[in-house]
Length: 231
Image (cartoon, rainbow, N blue to C red; front, side, top):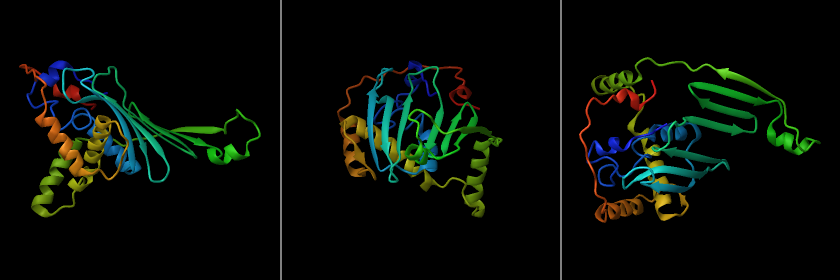
């Protein structure tokens, strides 16, 4: 649910440019989803992306992405995002042999298999039958004023040496994912991780130097930034 109108991108000369941001929806809008994903699942070891460059907007960077991922443990995953889709969705789904987790619309649902799927697959005598399941909603504890807590923690870390809730080093994974996803889409090839930073830097600099996109800007007033995120 990262929809943005044309006027949003016109509100700043730096927005949605290779020179100003180094990317589009992956780096600017949905980086928090990438951060949460890699924190929960770990980093993939290979990605293959399809990116739409200015598919929905008059911009020179990606605004539509579909990425397929391989993980070191044999798992596979897909990451899809767009700043041109509305109404959008914000859904995390993790499926394993013992069941499935779905986080959507502020609800976390757990479906458990009575028998693990890999065991059922090998022992079932009926081709179409699936194992019985149970479903439960897992309460999600709220956090009041999370941004204020993070800023207070940051200040306390500087003044008193308090341990950081979110150290900067933990943000490297999401930035690497954003870069490798757009890079894979641009060169239309699967890429192994860790990302070759020098190769991506050379590609990005080439995009900046050879950009011929005519960036449009416009004055925006009375913007409600609270509408840019879910409360």
